[in-house]
Image 1 (tube, rainbow, N blue to C red):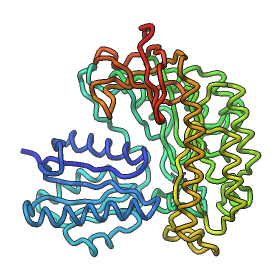
Image 2 (image 1 turned 180 degrees about the horizontal axis):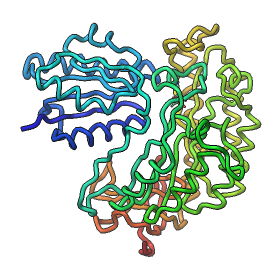
Image 3 (image 1 turned 180 degrees about the vertical axis):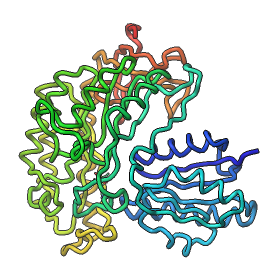
Image 4 (image 1 turned 90 degrees about the vertical axis):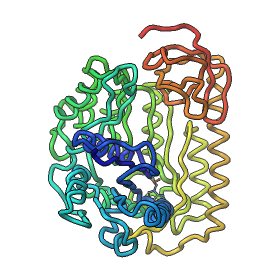
Length: 453
Ligand code: 5AD
Protein backbone atom coordinates (compact mmCIF):
# COMPACT_ATOMS: atom_id res chain seq x y z
CA UNK A 1 0.00 0.00 0.00
CA UNK A 2 1.29 3.42 -0.93
CA UNK A 3 1.49 5.91 1.92
CA UNK A 4 -1.32 8.38 2.53
CA UNK A 5 -0.81 12.12 2.74
CA UNK A 6 -2.62 14.91 4.56
CA UNK A 7 -1.91 18.52 3.56
CA UNK A 8 -2.99 21.40 5.79
CA UNK A 9 -2.95 24.82 4.15
CA UNK A 10 -2.41 28.24 5.71
CA UNK A 11 -2.82 31.59 3.95
CA UNK A 12 -3.99 32.73 0.56
CA UNK A 13 -5.71 31.21 -2.45
CA UNK A 14 -2.35 30.70 -4.14
CA UNK A 15 -1.42 28.45 -1.24
CA UNK A 16 -4.70 26.54 -1.58
CA UNK A 17 -3.97 26.07 -5.25
CA UNK A 18 -0.37 24.95 -4.62
CA UNK A 19 -1.58 22.38 -2.09
CA UNK A 20 -4.11 21.04 -4.54
CA UNK A 21 -1.48 20.67 -7.25
CA UNK A 22 0.88 18.87 -4.86
CA UNK A 23 -1.96 16.55 -3.81
CA UNK A 24 -2.78 15.79 -7.44
CA UNK A 25 0.88 15.13 -8.24
CA UNK A 26 1.09 12.76 -5.26
CA UNK A 27 -2.06 10.92 -6.34
CA UNK A 28 -0.63 10.56 -9.86
CA UNK A 29 2.35 8.78 -8.28
CA UNK A 30 0.16 6.37 -6.38
CA UNK A 31 -0.06 8.09 -2.99
CA UNK A 32 -3.50 8.33 -1.47
CA UNK A 33 -5.04 11.33 0.27
CA UNK A 34 -5.75 10.80 3.96
CA UNK A 35 -9.02 12.08 5.36
CA UNK A 36 -7.34 13.37 8.54
CA UNK A 37 -3.96 13.85 10.20
CA UNK A 38 -4.76 11.04 12.59
CA UNK A 39 -4.54 8.38 9.88
CA UNK A 40 -1.97 9.96 7.54
CA UNK A 41 1.49 8.52 6.86
CA UNK A 42 2.69 11.93 5.72
CA UNK A 43 1.57 15.29 7.14
CA UNK A 44 2.53 18.41 5.22
CA UNK A 45 1.87 21.97 6.36
CA UNK A 46 1.75 24.43 3.46
CA UNK A 47 2.67 27.69 5.15
CA UNK A 48 2.10 31.44 4.95
CA UNK A 49 4.60 34.18 5.89
CA UNK A 50 2.60 37.31 5.25
CA UNK A 51 2.27 37.97 8.98
CA UNK A 52 4.13 36.56 11.95
CA UNK A 53 0.91 35.14 13.39
CA UNK A 54 0.52 32.84 10.38
CA UNK A 55 4.07 31.54 10.83
CA UNK A 56 3.59 30.99 14.56
CA UNK A 57 0.38 29.08 13.92
CA UNK A 58 2.11 26.62 11.59
CA UNK A 59 5.11 26.25 13.90
CA UNK A 60 2.82 25.63 16.89
CA UNK A 61 0.86 23.09 14.89
CA UNK A 62 4.05 21.27 13.90
CA UNK A 63 5.25 21.21 17.51
CA UNK A 64 1.99 19.59 18.59
CA UNK A 65 2.08 17.12 15.73
CA UNK A 66 5.71 16.21 16.35
CA UNK A 67 5.11 15.55 20.04
CA UNK A 68 2.03 13.48 19.30
CA UNK A 69 3.61 11.46 16.50
CA UNK A 70 6.76 10.78 18.52
CA UNK A 71 4.51 9.21 21.13
CA UNK A 72 2.08 7.33 18.91
CA UNK A 73 3.42 6.89 15.37
CA UNK A 74 7.10 7.88 15.08
CA UNK A 75 7.32 6.68 11.47
CA UNK A 76 5.03 9.44 10.21
CA UNK A 77 6.81 11.83 7.82
CA UNK A 78 6.40 15.53 8.68
CA UNK A 79 7.06 18.39 6.29
CA UNK A 80 6.77 22.13 5.72
CA UNK A 81 5.96 23.48 2.27
CA UNK A 82 5.61 26.97 0.80
CA UNK A 83 6.39 30.48 1.95
CA UNK A 84 7.72 29.88 5.47
CA UNK A 85 9.66 26.85 4.23
CA UNK A 86 11.21 29.18 1.67
CA UNK A 87 12.15 31.93 4.10
CA UNK A 88 13.34 29.72 6.98
CA UNK A 89 14.70 26.63 5.20
CA UNK A 90 17.06 24.46 7.27
CA UNK A 91 16.33 26.55 10.39
CA UNK A 92 12.98 24.80 10.61
CA UNK A 93 14.66 21.43 11.04
CA UNK A 94 17.19 22.89 13.48
CA UNK A 95 14.29 24.15 15.56
CA UNK A 96 12.02 21.15 15.05
CA UNK A 97 14.22 18.06 14.56
CA UNK A 98 11.20 15.82 13.92
CA UNK A 99 10.59 17.58 10.61
CA UNK A 100 11.78 15.48 7.66
CA UNK A 101 11.01 17.67 4.67
CA UNK A 102 11.22 21.39 3.84
CA UNK A 103 10.11 22.36 0.33
CA UNK A 104 10.17 25.96 -0.91
CA UNK A 105 7.86 27.83 -3.27
CA UNK A 106 9.69 26.92 -6.49
CA UNK A 107 9.91 23.22 -5.60
CA UNK A 108 6.33 22.16 -4.86
CA UNK A 109 6.42 19.76 -7.81
CA UNK A 110 9.43 17.94 -6.31
CA UNK A 111 7.52 16.97 -3.17
CA UNK A 112 6.47 13.59 -4.53
CA UNK A 113 10.05 12.67 -5.54
CA UNK A 114 11.39 13.69 -2.15
CA UNK A 115 8.78 11.58 -0.37
CA UNK A 116 9.70 8.64 -2.62
CA UNK A 117 13.34 9.09 -1.56
CA UNK A 118 12.41 9.23 2.11
CA UNK A 119 10.22 6.10 1.91
CA UNK A 120 12.88 4.26 -0.11
CA UNK A 121 15.37 5.05 2.67
CA UNK A 122 17.60 6.99 0.26
CA UNK A 123 17.44 10.14 2.32
CA UNK A 124 16.27 10.94 5.82
CA UNK A 125 15.94 14.72 5.63
CA UNK A 126 15.34 16.89 2.58
CA UNK A 127 15.55 20.69 2.43
CA UNK A 128 15.08 22.25 -0.99
CA UNK A 129 14.46 25.98 -1.22
CA UNK A 130 16.33 26.65 -4.46
CA UNK A 131 15.17 28.62 -7.44
CA UNK A 132 13.98 26.72 -10.46
CA UNK A 133 13.44 28.02 -13.93
CA UNK A 134 10.06 27.11 -15.30
CA UNK A 135 8.59 26.28 -11.87
CA UNK A 136 5.75 28.76 -12.52
CA UNK A 137 4.37 26.23 -15.02
CA UNK A 138 4.56 23.32 -12.58
CA UNK A 139 1.35 24.20 -10.71
CA UNK A 140 -0.96 22.59 -13.23
CA UNK A 141 -2.59 19.43 -11.94
CA UNK A 142 -6.05 19.43 -10.39
CA UNK A 143 -7.89 17.02 -8.20
CA UNK A 144 -10.87 16.30 -10.38
CA UNK A 145 -13.31 13.56 -9.99
CA UNK A 146 -14.05 11.68 -13.18
CA UNK A 147 -17.69 11.80 -12.22
CA UNK A 148 -19.14 15.10 -13.41
CA UNK A 149 -21.74 15.14 -10.67
CA UNK A 150 -18.93 15.30 -8.15
CA UNK A 151 -16.31 17.33 -9.96
CA UNK A 152 -15.79 20.89 -8.80
CA UNK A 153 -17.83 23.74 -10.27
CA UNK A 154 -15.14 26.35 -9.72
CA UNK A 155 -11.38 26.11 -10.07
CA UNK A 156 -8.30 28.22 -9.44
CA UNK A 157 -5.67 28.45 -12.14
CA UNK A 158 -2.23 29.77 -11.27
CA UNK A 159 -1.05 32.01 -14.11
CA UNK A 160 2.18 33.39 -12.66
CA UNK A 161 4.47 33.30 -9.66
CA UNK A 162 6.29 35.98 -7.73
CA UNK A 163 6.20 39.75 -7.45
CA UNK A 164 8.62 42.56 -8.35
CA UNK A 165 6.76 45.36 -6.61
CA UNK A 166 8.65 45.29 -3.29
CA UNK A 167 6.07 47.07 -1.16
CA UNK A 168 8.01 48.06 1.94
CA UNK A 169 5.83 45.98 4.30
CA UNK A 170 5.67 42.81 2.24
CA UNK A 171 7.67 39.59 2.39
CA UNK A 172 6.21 38.10 -0.80
CA UNK A 173 9.02 39.05 -3.24
CA UNK A 174 11.40 37.20 -0.92
CA UNK A 175 9.27 34.10 -0.41
CA UNK A 176 7.80 33.81 -3.91
CA UNK A 177 10.68 35.24 -5.93
CA UNK A 178 10.54 37.47 -8.99
CA UNK A 179 7.64 37.60 -11.46
CA UNK A 180 7.46 34.63 -13.82
CA UNK A 181 4.46 34.06 -16.10
CA UNK A 182 3.16 30.94 -17.79
CA UNK A 183 2.32 31.16 -21.49
CA UNK A 184 -1.21 31.86 -22.73
CA UNK A 185 -1.49 28.52 -24.61
CA UNK A 186 -0.39 26.60 -21.52
CA UNK A 187 -2.98 28.34 -19.31
CA UNK A 188 -5.71 27.99 -21.94
CA UNK A 189 -5.01 24.26 -22.25
CA UNK A 190 -5.43 23.87 -18.49
CA UNK A 191 -8.68 25.86 -18.51
CA UNK A 192 -10.05 23.83 -21.42
CA UNK A 193 -9.37 20.61 -19.57
CA UNK A 194 -11.15 21.99 -16.52
CA UNK A 195 -14.14 23.05 -18.59
CA UNK A 196 -14.28 19.62 -20.22
CA UNK A 197 -14.55 18.13 -16.72
CA UNK A 198 -17.44 20.30 -15.67
CA UNK A 199 -15.77 23.38 -14.21
CA UNK A 200 -17.85 26.47 -15.02
CA UNK A 201 -16.02 29.26 -13.23
CA UNK A 202 -12.30 29.92 -13.36
CA UNK A 203 -10.35 32.23 -11.06
CA UNK A 204 -7.00 33.24 -12.48
CA UNK A 205 -4.45 33.54 -9.69
CA UNK A 206 -1.22 35.40 -9.21
CA UNK A 207 0.42 37.62 -6.59
CA UNK A 208 0.12 40.54 -9.01
CA UNK A 209 -1.91 39.48 -12.06
CA UNK A 210 -1.76 42.96 -13.63
CA UNK A 211 1.96 42.23 -14.23
CA UNK A 212 1.15 38.99 -16.04
CA UNK A 213 3.32 38.51 -19.15
CA UNK A 214 4.83 41.97 -18.82
CA UNK A 215 8.23 40.90 -20.01
CA UNK A 216 7.23 38.12 -22.42
CA UNK A 217 4.00 39.15 -24.14
CA UNK A 218 4.09 42.32 -26.25
CA UNK A 219 1.21 44.77 -25.90
CA UNK A 220 -1.17 44.24 -28.86
CA UNK A 221 -3.78 46.81 -29.93
CA UNK A 222 -3.24 48.54 -26.62
CA UNK A 223 -3.95 45.33 -24.73
CA UNK A 224 -1.60 44.05 -22.05
CA UNK A 225 -0.61 40.40 -21.77
CA UNK A 226 -3.15 39.96 -18.99
CA UNK A 227 -6.03 41.29 -21.08
CA UNK A 228 -4.92 39.05 -23.96
CA UNK A 229 -5.04 36.12 -21.56
CA UNK A 230 -8.56 37.10 -20.40
CA UNK A 231 -9.71 37.21 -24.02
CA UNK A 232 -8.24 33.77 -24.70
CA UNK A 233 -9.89 32.22 -21.63
CA UNK A 234 -13.14 33.97 -22.56
CA UNK A 235 -13.19 32.01 -25.83
CA UNK A 236 -13.34 28.65 -24.06
CA UNK A 237 -16.65 26.93 -24.39
CA UNK A 238 -18.01 25.72 -21.07
CA UNK A 239 -16.26 28.41 -19.04
CA UNK A 240 -19.16 30.63 -17.97
CA UNK A 241 -17.52 32.92 -15.47
CA UNK A 242 -14.06 34.36 -15.11
CA UNK A 243 -12.60 35.97 -12.00
CA UNK A 244 -9.04 36.92 -11.09
CA UNK A 245 -7.07 37.86 -8.02
CA UNK A 246 -5.14 39.95 -7.19
CA UNK A 247 -4.65 42.89 -9.49
CA UNK A 248 -2.50 45.84 -8.37
CA UNK A 249 -3.89 49.39 -8.72
CA UNK A 250 -0.58 50.51 -10.22
CA UNK A 251 -0.95 48.22 -13.23
CA UNK A 252 -4.75 48.53 -13.58
CA UNK A 253 -4.85 49.96 -17.08
CA UNK A 254 -7.80 51.20 -19.11
CA UNK A 255 -7.43 48.07 -21.26
CA UNK A 256 -8.44 46.04 -18.21
CA UNK A 257 -11.37 48.35 -17.41
CA UNK A 258 -12.51 48.06 -21.02
CA UNK A 259 -12.22 44.27 -20.89
CA UNK A 260 -15.20 44.40 -18.50
CA UNK A 261 -17.21 46.18 -21.17
CA UNK A 262 -16.38 43.62 -23.84
CA UNK A 263 -16.21 40.30 -22.03
CA UNK A 264 -19.51 39.22 -20.50
CA UNK A 265 -18.01 36.17 -18.77
CA UNK A 266 -15.80 38.48 -16.75
CA UNK A 267 -18.08 38.86 -13.74
CA UNK A 268 -18.65 42.20 -11.98
CA UNK A 269 -16.28 41.64 -9.14
CA UNK A 270 -12.97 43.26 -8.33
CA UNK A 271 -10.66 42.64 -5.41
CA UNK A 272 -8.34 45.62 -5.54
CA UNK A 273 -5.99 45.97 -2.55
CA UNK A 274 -5.62 49.64 -1.57
CA UNK A 275 -3.70 49.19 1.75
CA UNK A 276 -4.19 52.84 2.81
CA UNK A 277 -6.13 55.97 1.91
CA UNK A 278 -3.26 58.33 2.67
CA UNK A 279 -0.94 59.43 -0.12
CA UNK A 280 1.88 59.86 2.37
CA UNK A 281 1.49 56.25 3.51
CA UNK A 282 1.03 54.90 -0.01
CA UNK A 283 4.38 56.45 -0.81
CA UNK A 284 6.02 54.99 2.29
CA UNK A 285 4.58 51.62 1.27
CA UNK A 286 6.04 51.97 -2.22
CA UNK A 287 2.68 51.27 -3.78
CA UNK A 288 3.18 53.34 -6.92
CA UNK A 289 -0.26 55.02 -7.00
CA UNK A 290 -2.12 57.81 -5.26
CA UNK A 291 -5.50 57.87 -3.59
CA UNK A 292 -6.81 59.82 -6.55
CA UNK A 293 -5.58 57.24 -9.03
CA UNK A 294 -7.21 54.45 -6.99
CA UNK A 295 -10.52 56.31 -6.84
CA UNK A 296 -10.25 56.91 -10.59
CA UNK A 297 -10.02 53.17 -11.29
CA UNK A 298 -13.06 52.47 -9.11
CA UNK A 299 -15.04 55.18 -10.86
CA UNK A 300 -14.19 53.82 -14.31
CA UNK A 301 -15.05 50.26 -13.28
CA UNK A 302 -18.43 51.36 -11.95
CA UNK A 303 -19.10 53.31 -15.10
CA UNK A 304 -18.57 50.16 -17.15
CA UNK A 305 -20.35 47.83 -14.72
CA UNK A 306 -22.55 49.65 -12.19
CA UNK A 307 -23.11 46.45 -10.21
CA UNK A 308 -19.38 45.88 -9.70
CA UNK A 309 -18.68 44.33 -6.28
CA UNK A 310 -15.50 45.84 -4.87
CA UNK A 311 -13.40 44.42 -2.07
CA UNK A 312 -9.98 45.40 -0.82
CA UNK A 313 -7.14 44.78 1.63
CA UNK A 314 -6.15 47.43 4.17
CA UNK A 315 -3.20 47.40 6.57
CA UNK A 316 -3.45 48.90 10.05
CA UNK A 317 -1.06 50.32 11.23
CA UNK A 318 2.06 50.94 9.17
CA UNK A 319 4.99 52.46 11.11
CA UNK A 320 4.64 56.22 10.99
CA UNK A 321 0.89 56.16 10.35
CA UNK A 322 -0.70 59.10 12.15
CA UNK A 323 -4.30 59.60 13.20
CA UNK A 324 -4.68 61.87 10.16
CA UNK A 325 -3.41 59.16 7.79
CA UNK A 326 -5.80 56.71 9.37
CA UNK A 327 -8.72 59.11 8.94
CA UNK A 328 -7.88 59.28 5.25
CA UNK A 329 -8.24 55.51 5.10
CA UNK A 330 -11.63 55.77 6.83
CA UNK A 331 -12.75 58.47 4.42
CA UNK A 332 -11.57 56.41 1.42
CA UNK A 333 -13.58 53.44 2.68
CA UNK A 334 -16.64 55.71 2.96
CA UNK A 335 -16.08 57.16 -0.47
CA UNK A 336 -15.60 53.83 -2.27
CA UNK A 337 -18.18 51.95 -0.20
CA UNK A 338 -16.38 48.64 -0.37
CA UNK A 339 -18.57 45.55 -0.35
CA UNK A 340 -16.03 44.15 2.07
CA UNK A 341 -12.45 44.76 3.15
CA UNK A 342 -9.91 42.45 4.68
CA UNK A 343 -8.10 44.30 7.43
CA UNK A 344 -4.57 43.17 8.20
CA UNK A 345 -2.80 44.18 11.38
CA UNK A 346 0.68 45.25 10.41
CA UNK A 347 3.32 42.67 11.26
CA UNK A 348 7.02 43.51 10.81
CA UNK A 349 8.57 41.02 8.37
CA UNK A 350 12.13 39.85 7.97
CA UNK A 351 14.22 41.79 5.38
CA UNK A 352 11.44 44.31 4.66
CA UNK A 353 12.22 48.06 4.90
CA UNK A 354 9.06 48.84 6.87
CA UNK A 355 10.25 46.66 9.75
CA UNK A 356 13.09 49.15 10.31
CA UNK A 357 11.03 52.30 9.74
CA UNK A 358 10.64 54.74 12.61
CA UNK A 359 7.35 55.18 14.41
CA UNK A 360 6.36 51.54 15.02
CA UNK A 361 2.92 51.84 16.53
CA UNK A 362 2.00 50.38 19.90
CA UNK A 363 -0.29 47.37 20.01
CA UNK A 364 -3.07 49.25 21.81
CA UNK A 365 -3.26 51.87 19.06
CA UNK A 366 -3.30 49.14 16.42
CA UNK A 367 -6.21 47.44 18.15
CA UNK A 368 -8.11 50.68 18.48
CA UNK A 369 -7.75 51.64 14.79
CA UNK A 370 -8.46 48.09 13.74
CA UNK A 371 -11.74 48.14 15.68
CA UNK A 372 -12.81 51.49 14.24
CA UNK A 373 -12.05 50.45 10.67
CA UNK A 374 -13.75 47.08 11.13
CA UNK A 375 -16.90 48.74 12.47
CA UNK A 376 -17.03 51.03 9.43
CA UNK A 377 -16.36 48.22 6.94
CA UNK A 378 -19.09 46.10 8.55
CA UNK A 379 -21.55 48.96 8.46
CA UNK A 380 -20.89 49.76 4.79
CA UNK A 381 -20.86 46.07 3.89
CA UNK A 382 -24.19 45.48 5.62
CA UNK A 383 -25.75 48.25 3.52
CA UNK A 384 -24.55 46.58 0.31
CA UNK A 385 -26.04 43.28 1.41
CA UNK A 386 -29.31 44.86 2.57
CA UNK A 387 -29.67 46.52 -0.82
CA UNK A 388 -29.80 43.10 -2.46
CA UNK A 389 -32.91 42.07 -0.52
CA UNK A 390 -35.90 41.80 -2.87
CA UNK A 391 -33.71 41.62 -5.94
CA UNK A 392 -33.23 38.76 -8.30
CA UNK A 393 -29.62 37.68 -8.55
CA UNK A 394 -27.89 35.25 -10.86
CA UNK A 395 -25.87 32.69 -8.94
CA UNK A 396 -23.60 29.80 -9.83
CA UNK A 397 -24.34 26.97 -7.41
CA UNK A 398 -21.13 25.54 -5.95
CA UNK A 399 -22.45 22.90 -3.56
CA UNK A 400 -23.67 22.47 0.01
CA UNK A 401 -23.22 25.46 2.31
CA UNK A 402 -20.23 25.00 4.62
CA UNK A 403 -22.08 26.23 7.69
CA UNK A 404 -25.22 24.26 7.02
CA UNK A 405 -24.68 21.35 4.63
CA UNK A 406 -28.44 20.79 4.40
CA UNK A 407 -28.60 23.95 2.31
CA UNK A 408 -26.97 24.84 -0.98
CA UNK A 409 -24.66 27.73 -1.65
CA UNK A 410 -23.75 29.78 -4.70
CA UNK A 411 -22.19 33.12 -5.56
CA UNK A 412 -23.63 36.15 -7.29
CA UNK A 413 -21.65 37.57 -10.18
CA UNK A 414 -20.35 40.26 -7.84
CA UNK A 415 -19.10 37.62 -5.43
CA UNK A 416 -21.67 37.54 -2.64
CA UNK A 417 -22.49 34.20 -1.08
CA UNK A 418 -26.13 33.15 -1.37
CA UNK A 419 -27.51 30.30 0.74
CA UNK A 420 -30.79 28.66 -0.30
CA UNK A 421 -32.91 25.56 0.14
CA UNK A 422 -31.86 23.38 -2.72
CA UNK A 423 -30.49 20.01 -3.56
CA UNK A 424 -27.62 18.29 -5.31
CA UNK A 425 -29.33 18.72 -8.65
CA UNK A 426 -28.73 22.48 -8.47
CA UNK A 427 -25.00 21.97 -8.29
CA UNK A 428 -23.14 23.56 -11.21
CA UNK A 429 -26.23 25.42 -12.39
CA UNK A 430 -26.41 29.08 -13.15
CA UNK A 431 -29.79 30.16 -11.85
CA UNK A 432 -31.75 33.13 -10.65
CA UNK A 433 -32.68 33.44 -7.02
CA UNK A 434 -34.81 35.95 -5.26
CA UNK A 435 -32.97 37.42 -2.27
CA UNK A 436 -35.15 37.12 0.84
CA UNK A 437 -32.86 38.48 3.51
CA UNK A 438 -29.30 39.47 4.32
CA UNK A 439 -27.10 38.20 7.14
CA UNK A 440 -23.52 39.03 7.93
CA UNK A 441 -21.79 39.02 4.52
CA UNK A 442 -24.27 36.36 3.38
CA UNK A 443 -27.52 36.51 1.42
CA UNK A 444 -30.44 34.10 1.76
CA UNK A 445 -32.46 33.35 -1.34
CA UNK A 446 -35.22 31.35 -2.95
CA UNK A 447 -34.82 29.77 -6.34
CA UNK A 448 -37.31 32.05 -8.07
CA UNK A 449 -37.17 30.95 -11.59
CA UNK A 450 -35.15 27.89 -12.40
CA UNK A 451 -33.19 29.29 -15.15
CA UNK A 452 -31.48 27.30 -17.48
CA UNK A 453 -28.04 26.81 -17.92
N1 5AD B 1 1.59 42.90 7.82
C1 5AD B 1 0.26 42.87 7.72
N2 5AD B 1 -0.39 42.65 6.58
C2 5AD B 1 0.34 42.43 5.48
N3 5AD B 1 -0.01 42.17 4.20
C3 5AD B 1 1.11 42.01 3.48
N4 5AD B 1 2.19 42.17 4.26
C4 5AD B 1 1.74 42.43 5.51
C5 5AD B 1 2.38 42.69 6.75
N5 5AD B 1 3.71 42.74 6.87
C6 5AD B 1 -1.41 42.13 3.77
C7 5AD B 1 -1.67 43.10 2.61
C8 5AD B 1 -1.90 42.19 1.44
C9 5AD B 1 -2.50 40.99 2.13
C10 5AD B 1 -2.52 39.73 1.34
O1 5AD B 1 -1.70 40.85 3.27
O2 5AD B 1 -2.85 43.83 2.90
O3 5AD B 1 -2.76 42.74 0.46
